[in-house]
Image (tube, rainbow, N blue to C red):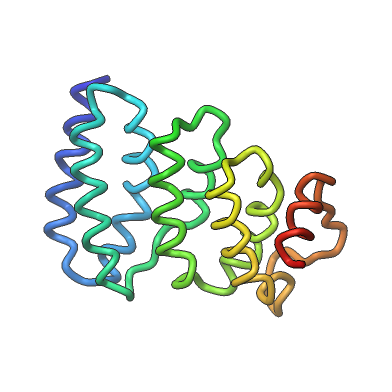
Length: 166
């Protein structure tokens, strides 16, 4: 409900003040960031959600030791029902967090990145491709849960990747 959403967002603002260390902020963001972004589709919750997002954005840009919940952000970004608002903010945080990601986390996500590229707008596609290239080496790395074996890209995505690389 609306009051639940607003009290959730209000508690996020207080928790952000409390989370002074990078590690504490990383844990907090795993719990609240994607949920906050999804609340942007709710007209009544949007102003408060934007306040939380602005706060998070200011913090994570400067605190380079903060890890972002990449898998969850990618799920928000890829959701069929995601609004442009949600996509843009999910992408903002994906781009900030990607270069800080753990290789063991990035490897498996590369394939998710590449899989559905064609249904996203051009600027997002370019960002996804750059993120994928940044972490290609981690796919199938020692200890990784996924490898390239048996991985195929749909033709439109394969074409997009080819033209980007050439």
